[in-house]
Image 1 (cartoon, one colour):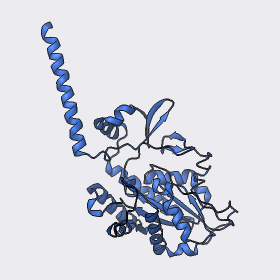
Image 2 (image 1 turned 30 degrees about the vertical axis):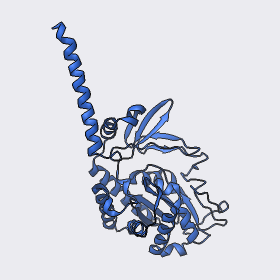
Image 3 (image 1 turned 180 degrees about the vertical axis):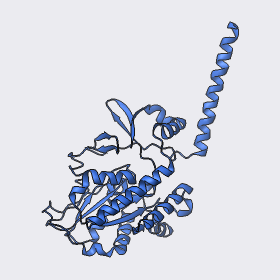
Image 4 (image 1 turned 90 degrees about the vertical axis):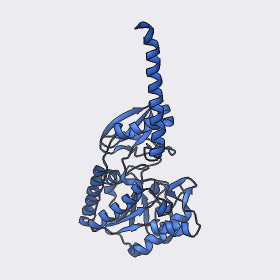
Amino acid sequence: MGRKFIPNTLLFLSATIIGVLIIELGLRSLYPITFVHVETLGAPSGWDILPDRVLGWHPKLGTRLYDENGILFSRSIYAKVAGPKLLLIGDSVTFRAQIVNSLANLLPPEITFLNGGVIGYNIEQEIEFFFRFQKGLRPDAIIHQMHINDLQASRQLFRRDGTTKLYSPRVTEVTINPVLYRYSHLYRFLVANLASRYSKDELKASAVESLRRMRDYARQNGIAYHLVLFPMLEPLADWTAYDRETRDYLLNAARRLELDVIDLQPVAEQMISAGIDPKEGPRDPLHPNQSMGEAAAKYIVKRIPSLLTLQPSSKTSTVNSRSSMQP
């Protein structure tokens, strides 16, 4: 028995290693890396986060980046005189401000554009963040820029106190091995499915309930609430089945809630057909470049002509000089 122990142990270890490699290769083949990707945030200057049991995490407010109301200083545009306030909420597309800046070039200069975008948020988080921090701004209109990938579990990795931790809504923070995360597809898969697991039905239900909550609040307070759905910046024929299903679901859910929704997919498709690249980077189908931002803004104004005559619905205070900083 003693003489067989070492060979048997080596055989077992070899079989285990081979099995793990087979699973690793299988996952890489069956599931694209984006499917099990836990997004790592490239922190902007001045960025810091606070863990939150409901939101998972939120940016620290009252900093050089975000004010106390969850508004981005440098990516908002302030009118010189008191006028209507347009709040834009959403994820990294809103945060990067290509559409925000383009809208400001099309709409009257009396409008203040407040950028409340947060990188990595999904629909539930975007709306909860509004009610937690932005509601007191009492905007005259809200443009909620949903993204096709906003119907996924929101998970973020941050390095804090010398360790890398994962944050996700309603889940206690989880310590992550950054080396395994970077190189092992299997490890990412386990993180995505065990550390903070959500079923697709749960994500759908939470998104719809959040949209209903926002709709009711806006109607009760006389606030114009507009939904914009941002697409994958690829030909629709090349979208994954998951992304196509998500688009259909969000469009139908908004209509069931009697919310008008502006789908920007035809805008992107038209640009691509004309040979114009809408992407911010060659491998970034998630974020628009300036050309896409301008085209999207023109389409939004065409679909929501009331923005051209937006008026303050309540007494507003004078704000800082009108300014903008490109993302």
